[in-house]
Length: 176
Image 1 (cartoon, rainbow, N blue to C red):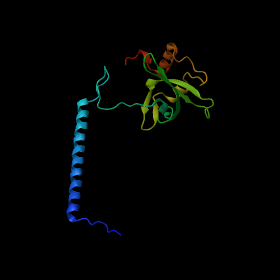
Image 2: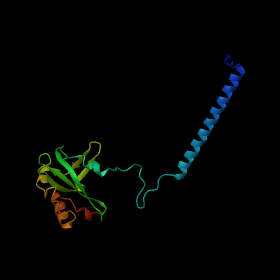
Image 3: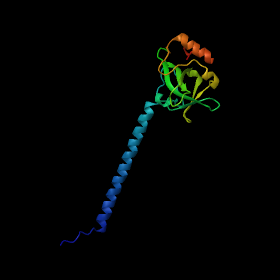
Image 4: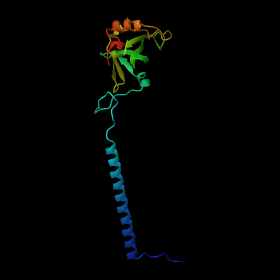
């Protein structure tokens, strides 16, 4: 049987010295790489804002459209008013026109669907609530329909009636 090789103190010291040199070299390369990466990021600068907009210090609030359907709709007094069934987008103007709210009924049967101007809706994402600035009594008496009989929501005359009923100017007449 062969005896295991004995390391003498000099060879152990040389090994440790070489290992330390490699560690220092690796740390130096890592530091250089970090400086190069940081200088590249600074050279690119801040993102350029879209034409016609000003740079902002804060990000905007973006909400996935399907999230709206999970939010509860409440009055300023905290009353549960129902839920959003549809969000109507005017593609010509490029903005949300209406939220279609459903309420009443039992287990989805007999629900009224009521279009409300999007300007009457305030978002509270931390609470998962859409605050509707319309009185519950006014909402219950509002023009409504059943979910299976969607009216011509794109008709501007009909839209003017809805906006007038709630006391909001038609969205297409507002400047953005």
